[in-house]
Image (tube, rainbow, N blue to C red):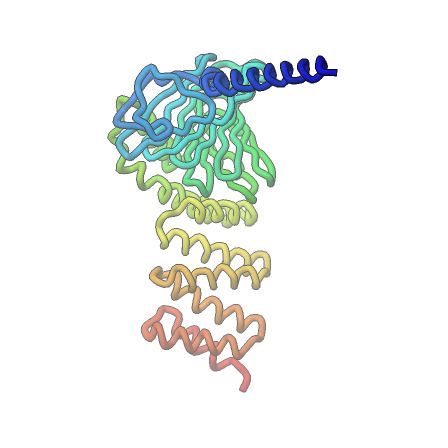
Length: 350
């Protein structure tokens, strides 16, 4: 009767010994099974990898977080010879690389990345994820810029597919598009035929080039340069009666803009298009109210106060019309719409 007990006791000791050995080995194994992503080939300034100063020729791994300040950048080469440069003021996470299925993912939290992607096999996929959009590459050279709200992609060679939950577009050599969560990507625009877009592209090229970092000051203005272009492009689209595309371009203007003036202008022009061409007065009023709440120090605050009163008049909500027109006359005694306000107030039935 004692033999089975002794055998069980010996077996238990073996199990405990085995578990102790495993516990001692596993921490070292974790370091050994890190997934290699690539190697740092160039450094400028003091970029950080996982909070520590990056070093040339050091390996980087899946899961690593790379951060650059306003005076630093770095480039990484992958095993398949794909090269990407992380520009100043950027934050990138190396999400995935899998040689079995050829799937590589980089998350661009903010800033810009320039990629020169090696020729991919048919099953391979190289993607940059940012702001709810995915830039899927099919063997190409391109630059992606993100402010965490929206993604802007310039394709220099090959094809890039831009995908959001609202649809996708393909951009080819010399084309630009923009994307964000909840918005259909902008129809690709030829940046080689648009001087402002060409200037944006050259700015992005220069800040991802280790030889020419002189465009850094301009790069800080890039979000507003993109926003201004979108507003102007929306005007062109509206004149061409492409009102939905114009609204989309204004959405991207708002998302990219740092300047309160540009944000307010985008909202105001959206309100005009929605009221004038879609008769969507409630949506138009919502954009105008956003201006009243968030952008009081811009010129579009005056426009918004007047426009809300005018929309109320069109809806025959005369009390609301009088409320906003009287507000306008009080806040803007020399306002540009005062004569129109007086005419409409006199037309309101007693």
